[in-house]
Amino acid sequence: MKESTSWYLFIFAGLVIFVLLGIHMVIMHLDGILLALGIGYENVLKFNSVFARGKQTFFVVLYILLLGFALFHGFYGLRTILFELNLKRGIKKAVTAILVLAGLALFAYGTYAAVAFYSLQG
Image 1: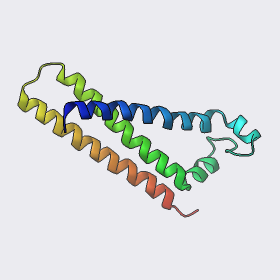
Image 2: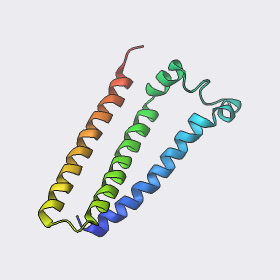
Image 3: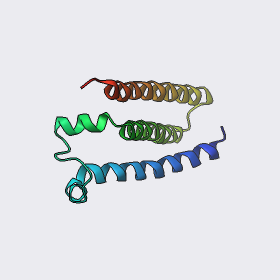
Image 4: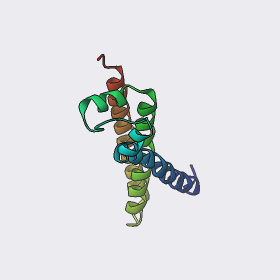
């Protein structure tokens, strides 16, 4: 993939994170307003509320999307910072491979956790 395409994806990921975190902030921190409107959760940090959100497809998808975009944005940003050190080509390839593998492993683990929580009986 061209470096400019990766950069545009990095910017796009940042914008998506901004929107998804905005949704998260409204749900988690403006709960009084949402409850007044008849939507939302009472005591958002109580186990019952956390469990109810984790059982909704919307939140599972939201968490997985946020995880994916945040991992890409963070690891690509870290890669860019490391490449500013003028590393040799072989080291750059190794850094890229390590970050890709770490990102994929963390994404798989996070997705598994979200889906496993969604699948809990309760």
